[in-house]
View (tube, rainbow, N blue to C red):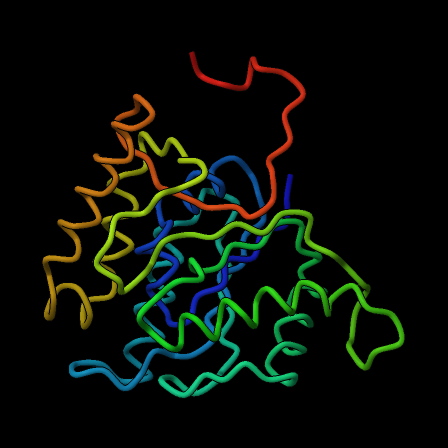
Length: 230
């Protein structure tokens, strides 16, 4: 089983971008950490305490029996995230503590400055986590895979490298998104419908009931075409 870190600029980015995949991977037994770079506040209807409770509830929704999805807040300031050495090393320390095999981060093209900065931090932290003779705690690690999920504020359709078949986990994702009541129930409730439509659309691209899109800059490894659905 893999150790997985899903990096999110704000609590709810991981759920909206790949919530069904998180639930699927948890059910398969993988060890998953949701790393929130900021607390996501202020927002019109939220506050730090409420948002933290919503994030904890969402992680609980995505968890599998006997395999809870864990969550950690790094604590950089929302709306003011900067790509710095200190931020890179903080995230690299998380990779080391978790001994991450796989990292997911938001797609690198976005209208939100926090998303762009966080993805750059997550990318560079992957390199920093493997360095020797550096003031970072924990055992060195270099996550083998780095994938991008789509939680973009740009009005365009993703052009993914691959789609994850999440049939059976559609409702789990929607329930996790709705856990953020201040964001997607009391405000901007259309987002839940958009998430549902997106899973249907990307599912249709691979002949599945529901799917979520991902991008990779590095080639995926196959040792047989039997892994490809025909």
